[in-house]
Image 1 (cartoon, rainbow, N blue to C red):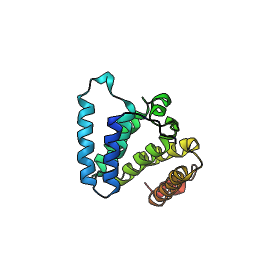
Image 2: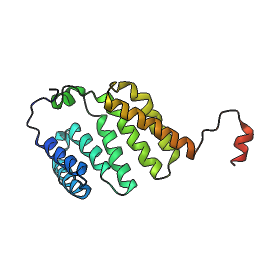
Image 3: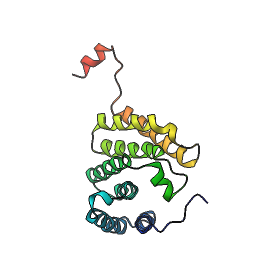
Image 4: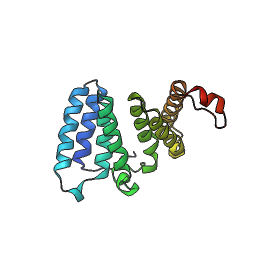
Length: 175
């Protein structure tokens, strides 16, 4: 069993919200996540746990109906990951490594940017996701994220093909 025993009520509440989301109750999940977020924001600045923030923001993004709100939460999750340590993550689950969070986080930011029509930003974050994907395990989750990265790359390339460097005739056509 990889899960370590803990009494982390915040992670338990986030887990309940994720269960609502999986069951199709996105509105209920958003409401519960908003309550948890309010409690986190009310806590003193130095006591906010980056694991709570990254996890909550990641799941909150998934239940948004507005792509701009989804992006806002995805960026919040990405920023929080920068403050998270392996030690803290592993106190929640011994198998966690923060580096393995980045492919999914960048993938989500890329997808939200693409939904908003921000192709260069989407491509930037998708490239980061691909660069970080070597941190993913060779398992079902890792394969799912790698597959999603490849599919989103394909979608972006269909929408806005990359013009090869030195192809000035083709560049001139797009001016």
